[in-house]
Length: 142
Length: 142
Length: 142
Length: 142
Image 1: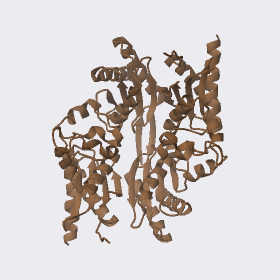
Image 2: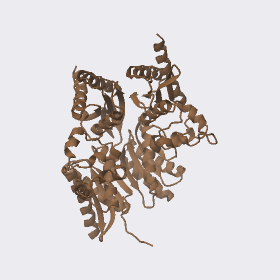
Image 3: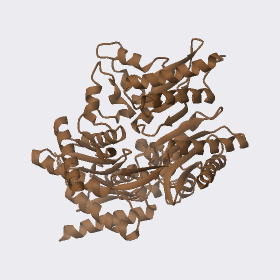
Image 4: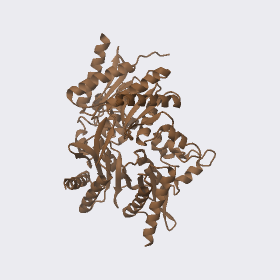
């Protein structure tokens, strides 16, 4: 048997609120998704003006980051033409996201969940996801 | 051209909180999804102990209720063997839900969104969805 | 944060071996799938003569039993025409299985995984799944 | 009529065990899938720490290698921008894998199955798949 730790709904809300706050700061309404460590959705919100297409994209970014234990922008680098993971973007029915904005959430060196953000540029999406993690970690430290 | 009214994220949060409160009252952790009038997801949460399978089911109940402008339990009745909508349950890749727990959200006689709940019995799911709507309507009246 | 227990690969092998032994006893070659508590596949085998269609069915039975925390034959009863969960069989793209042969694996009252069996009659499938669980529990007790 | 030779479950176990042994040697927990010559799954295992996303990816690599009679990394080369098979990665709902780690299993010059490995780098995945084949061939020779 295996014992593991994962995000709960309270964690998900903190991650989502931290991301939303940063999205407001930069003025880009976002879709924000939080999954557990297995990539299963815990919470989601589409801010006013967030893109409908970004609903699925944010959920799949969080899924990829958690279930593959890897930031989606790292897959972006690894899957460029000529790079080793070229073509991975269409795996799992296209759910494996290689566009920035999905980050694994780590605790004590273990992946405990994922956050996925979409509607801005990939750099904005990634910054908003990171802001959610930073805020969550700051609260854990208290 | 057409002007329409739909739920925003604040509405979704009120609907979700009202549903969650009722779920706690009856002691059944639920997956709760809110969509806009087009059936597109606005917000979702899986309470601690909510079923993983219910993630998709709650989202699809809300989608069905909003986009078909019909409670999912009404489709349950209409899709029994011999009834006119028999077989509709497998439509749209199985997204059209005919199990209770999905309700359209109405405002001034118009469908402005949907709420979908899953993890309990269909009767419990439906009661929790209704509680979310009741709470939202009570707040609108103030 | 949430701490939970789930099956590991050694558990999965024991469950699969116990099920296989019973399948040989009754002379029905089976597809056997084991998932973790989130419904994600840990191990699978198709015995010689097991049906190709049963590959997906066994995996989806294990997924349903674990992720919905419910035996698939219980869904069979609950989803008959006129019963509350009628129509649930086509949910999640048809992955939600209501045919017997999927059982949640429990430990200390918590669902820690699922086992799904397919290729025989549903009653045979269920008996083979139960044999896997019985064998695993007997070994845990030692 | 046609007579064909394909892997059986015992072969699949040998292939999987050889791959697992090499995965342990390089310290990368892997998802390992074995299919018959038609690309249909015979056996699968996710080692402790193997990625959830790699479940589907390993199965699809084995499927591609067997059913297309071609190593997945060869598709990687053939599907680069400007190359003849450009765009093939999204075929079959994304099941056609062009990332290394899927190898056809040959016997007397005929494809009798496939092995797919995922969770490491594509080079690691491919090496682990090859180790499974090497071990199986060595045992056949005895």
